[in-house]
Amino acid sequence: MGALSRRRFLTVSGLGLGALAGGGLAGCAASMKGDFAPKSGPRVVVIGGGWGGATAAKYVRLLDPGVEVILIEPGRRFVSCPFSNLVVAGVRTIDSLTMGYDGLRQRGVRIIHETASAIEPDTKRVRLGEGYLQYDRLLVSPGVDFQWEQVEGLAQNQETILHAWKAGPQTVQLAQQLAAMPDGGVFVLSIPLAAYRCPPGPYERTSLVAWYLKANKPRAKLIVLDANPNIISKTALFRAAWQAYPNIDYRPASRVIGVDPGAREVRTEFDRVRYDVLNLIPPQRAGAIAVQADLVGGDKRWCEVNHVTYESVKQPGIHVIGDATIGLPVPKSGNVANAMGKIAAASVVSLINGKQPPTLAPGNTCYSWVSDREAIAVVNAYKIDNGKVVQIEQKLTPAQSPLVAQRAVGWAQSIWADVLS
Amino acid sequence: MSAAPLVAAGLLLGVLGATTAEAAGPLDERGAVKSVTCAACHGVGGNSRSAAMPIIAGLDAGYLKKQIEAYAAGKRLSAEMEPYAKQVLDLGVDDVVAYFAARRREPTPVTSPADAIARGSSAAAQCASCHGPRGQGDAAQGIPSLAGQAPGYLREQMLLFKAERRSPGDPAVGAVKAMLKAIPDDTFADLAAYYSSLR
Picture 1 (cartoon, one colour):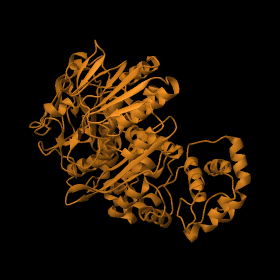
Picture 2 (cartoon, rainbow over the protein chains, first blue to last red):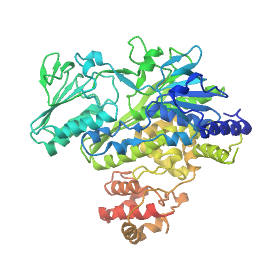
Picture 3 (cartoon, one colour):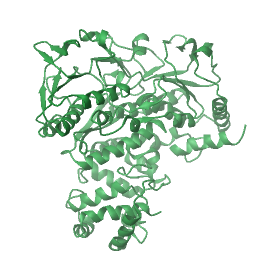
Picture 4 (cartoon, each protein chain N blue to C red):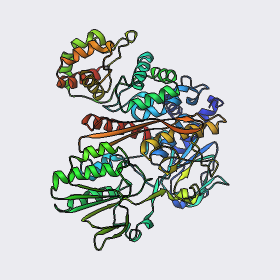
């Protein structure tokens, strides 16, 4: 931003905030016709206000207040997926994981609570309602969508068979179903083949559901049908934690291919399993807008990006971050999305100002709760080597402990603020 | 246009800490860009707001560099910090520690019960000979400031020192360990409450 003079900085940032104060964008579909918010200076549009997109929107403003930032996110509140398994187990409330976007607004981010319907890369436009927004650089953080059709019987029952894999109403419903399950009942958790959002998440959920059942329904059972050949993250630490939970019946290489809610039964390639409560986490792909805009690869699932700038390898000028990306040796985690958001923001600001983007690699800090008071963690650090992200090191906490859980709480408080305030 | 947007815009830059808002933006300060990953746990500018994660804003650069090198070498045992310390060494530790050393330290917002602070104040007499009467430390001696630090972090470090899980065998911290081994674990929470309350 060296070229940015103080005069331009003051003028542009003042204009941006002034327009915000005047309520220039109401986010009302009826008012979104044609070029409903004409561009007056450099503009970054961000699609998706989750861990990646919200962070990116904030950091573009931090790194260059002369750049206008518009964030498109249908949800009016941010609900954290990390820690949401504690809600399933009745340890935390969903309210404690729900936050607003006012912090971003105070940084001058303009937020439109709508769904972007299409991206037009050739004209650098994002379609919204009956109108469009013009951008100089577009950041897409679309998260994941579910591949309902991969499980027979799921598509037509997707409202009632719970995934609880996007924190929100389904998280609360699953907690209610778990609480209402009879003692002696069977809770079935189905895990899709990797890659999916949050590799250790299903095993953390396994631990917390088992903890809940052990304490509240000692005759109940938890059957875990894992499509993967083994626990795919923090394997030894989860195995150690599960020593305390003989109520877990873990079945690896058990891919669920069908569900029959009438018979309360799921089907694997070899078996039928009856359930009282079912939590079926479907296979996943990048969010719909990434498929619409042809940001996904040949498998129509994930988006390949430049490892330094996060620019799509398919669409110049469009940067993709978070769980939707593929090809970097990083997990699909909130912490990685947060790191990608910052690095992509630095890249985008550099490119807008005619500078070389910095070569920064993400990091991953990932805590998993194994009971109401103990947690474990894995940490990955990366560097850029010949233009590619490579891992420097992965470390695991030596054992589960309340001290790790205390640090998990500290991490959550810090990173929620880093994303949103 | 009122002055308020100007002030707000100035604050935006101030958070990432451009030393001069005249021409150089945050992207021009090497340490600011290299340390963006750290903010996820340590807060923007190193001012953690949680009990467990330490505030690293305003730490003496020499002290912070020594800690990062100790984490990377496995001398200060931490599954979380060892990989990140190696990442910082890869990026350039001097830029990163200079950035955090130049940040204004904001004391922890985490409050502790008055009775715990009072008990901690009484127990702290033995700590003052090194950390100073107000916990301000002595940068020239490599002794960190404890005043306003996150209480959960302070308590955990005392537990780790006592259990020989922080810098095992390091003679530079032999005296502090000997002292902590004579203090009951319960008192650590009081000491942490007291030092975190100092300004």
